[in-house]
Image 1: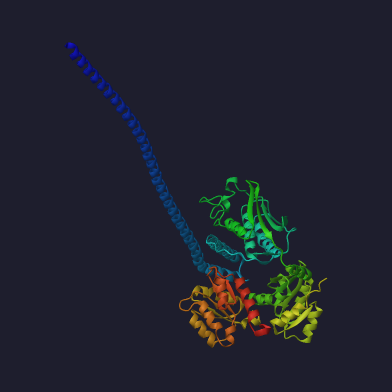
Image 2: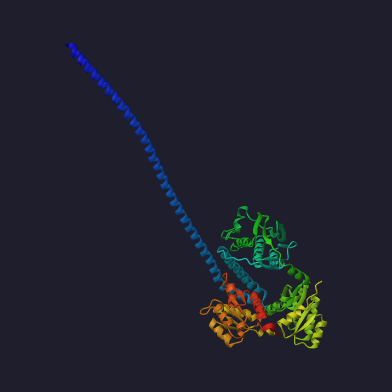
Length: 454
Length: 139
């Protein structure tokens, strides 16, 4: 009965096999499930990992954004602190410049005060006069430097003001001629002023314009050893308006190309070394350019080493009242005051002001002769006391003045007799005005002397 | 020296001896009579007691300053309130001109003093302010 046992065992074995198969299948299935679960986990992990990285990255970015924004804020703060420090330093420099220039003025008053008083003494020997002139000149240079420092302080602290008013451009050019002709002659240079294109009266800040023109002429003459300095004034049309164009051209040493901008900076000089040939604070051009800009214009330069330089000042041009121009043209001529006492001269200038004529002054009848020979004097005023002690001397002096070219000669005479008046008129005086007389009456009397307009 | 200027009496109020000397010498050339006061209070007293044609006033002085002194002059109830006053100063601040004119000064002359400018200012002021409507008498 082996068969039954074996059949049973076979069946049990089969059964066991089946179980095994089922178990294996189940385990396969489980494995598969596990695989699936594992791969799902993997994906989840990867996803989570990715998320974590993203979050990490975001966090990192956020942190570094915050850090760089902190750095930016810090940089901004530092920048504004630096600006503050710079402003304080500039203000301190401006105040220092202003204070220094103020402090220097007082002793300078002592020096220039005395030299001016000494120079007004006609009895000085030529040698002594020369020496005192030298001292006076040096003092005047210091005064100019002190004024430059003050201007620079005003410019840098933004407190420079431009005041436009009726300006006699021709008068300004006349002054330029008279001031610089002598200096040019000393260096044997030709000074040429071409004013053919110049407008007469303009609306501009006269003193500042004068400052610029004088600075340019001063430099031109300073830096030119031979040849000429030429100042030309003209008008150009630019779009709607007109422009005043002023050029100073010299045949001087010229400016190196790489220094053409630097010369307009404060305290810069082309030759900044210890053995500078040319004196000065180095402020002139920088002030001139800033003034030009404050006046609405420009100041530029062209130059060739060894050949010379041309400085060009361009300003907006506003012509001043037509009425003023007409009256100045109509009367024409110049009023000459012959008077030695400077205070009396000044009083007479004020008395003559209502005539509307430009006024010149000269100390005595002798010095008047030279002025009169120019032929442009329309009216002249002199006091009898300056002409001589008695009628004879005075009449002779009057004749002399008339011979020298005095038309319209008015003579003030202290308490004149009728014979005095007759003799004076016969000698060629146009009017004899009795003294004492008040300023107002004197003005009236002078007004009657004006030539009728043609 | 002509007759007119030796009749002009100027009072100069200035604390610095050197500056007084300079202006004294300059005015000497014009032949005017110069009186001096070393500080404002003395100057005001001298105006009370004396008879001046023109005042030259420094600004920075110990005690009363120049502008205050000018205000006192202009605040007077008599004819001396119209005395011509010229400020002579080394002060070059931006508003100095306005401040002086507002206090009642007629003109300003800056130190260092340019003699011609001082005389110009004096001549103008004497002609315009001095002697009533007719102006000063030229003798």
